[in-house]
Amino acid sequence: MNFQPTEMQQQIAQMIRDFGKTHIQPHVMEWDEAQTFPLPLFRHLGELGLMGVLVPGQYKGSGFGYPEYVTVISEIARFCGAIGLSVAAHNSLCTGHILQFGNEEQKQKYLPRLATAEWIGAWGLTEPNTGSDAMNMKCVAKQEGDEWVLNGTKCWITHGRSCDVAVVVARTGEVRDSHGMTAFVVEKGTPGFSGGKKENKLGMRASETAEMIFDNCRLPAANMLGQVGEGFIQSMKVLDGGRISIAALSLGIAKGAYDAALQYAQERHQFDQPIASFQGVSFKLADMATQIAAAELLTMQAADLKQRGQVATKQAAMAKYYASEVAVKVANDAVQIFGGYGYTKDFPVEKYYRDAKLCTIGEGTSEIQKIVIAREAMRG
Ligand SMILES: Cc1cc2nc3c(=O)[nH]c(=O)nc-3n(C[C@H](O)[C@H](O)[C@H](O)COP(=O)(O)OP(=O)(O)OC[C@H]3O[C@@H](n4cnc5c(N)ncnc54)[C@H](O)[C@@H]3O)c2cc1C
Image 1 (cartoon, rainbow, N blue to C red):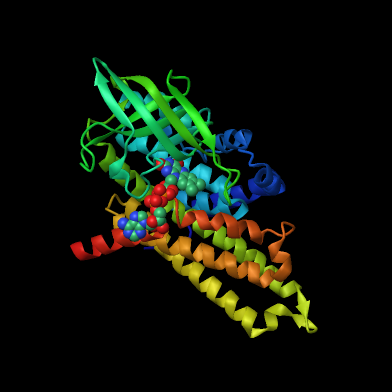
Image 2: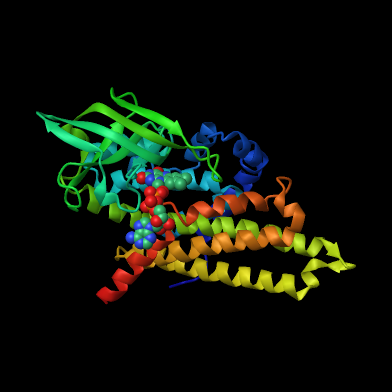
């Protein structure tokens, strides 16, 4: 494995840095405070090819691989975790599910619109009473003639209100049967499909999180992804990629917080010297840099395996678990290095601190990652 970023990764990173300085950075706090989901920004990111990173060119995507995808998400998250989260959910969950499991007709219909951000995607697995325990889901799909009828509520869904298209996993068999769930594509405007409550969140506030409600929502059989009973297994495979996304998101947040703390520690003087000259501060910076480097190696390892078509379940879970915990720790240390100023909204670290926490929860909590890692380890 080559640890150096490729020329393409360097070009992508530079493009995002240039774009982010003008189009993201100046608005970060305004979007955060008002919980604005900045739709025009995502259309703009679509023009840059960042909303269909893994989608092949034949469907109007960028046709990049997982290593480049990690660069995209982490570089965006350095500016704003919430924008990084939305780009990640759009790319790897909704678009990723259709890319991996859609038939040719479905790919041709949805992927070009998603890859260009003409349409925004959502992915609904979680329900009010079933997060980690997804096999216990209550949202049902019943077959009636040539149609499927969906009833139930999905919650915590990224773009649950603003999406133009959603992939939804619903119960079609017995509770706790891994073959008892099926995935469907649902378009905005389908009668019986509506967005519900928008969550008022601690962090990631510019990324919309909302309920999706299905009330006798009738779907043609052509909207089913794959076969009846494959929805849960498909979702677990989608989450293998999704966890690399969240690892990359964590990495970007950690790097953003570290960069800010490193600069501040050299500028801020106390006792007539920069605070970076105190060992108590410089050792914190050393730990932060080391943990970020380790998280990056784990993330790139998972991305490399995924890129080579190998099973990456354990490595993706390790990367997600470690990188997200590092993001929380690094952001916490960054606030500490900023002292009182770090506790205010005049400096960026309080937002990294709030945003980072989501990374240990979304797409499987740290505890669930440990269950996955232990299970895979025992399999040998
Ligand atoms: C901002 C945001 C965006 C999200 N976006 C999406 C999305 O787009 N689509 C989607 O489907 N979902 C989404 N989610 C949902 C997210 O994936 C769930 O919140 C997550 O999986 C945890 O589920 P839960 O919140 O129900 O927690 P619970 O499952 O109720 O867990 C509560 C606590 O119990 C622990 N726990 C549970 N089971 C075990 C166990 N067996 N062993 C040890 N500990 C355990 C957990 O680790 C956690 O600490 C989003 C959530 C947030 C906050």
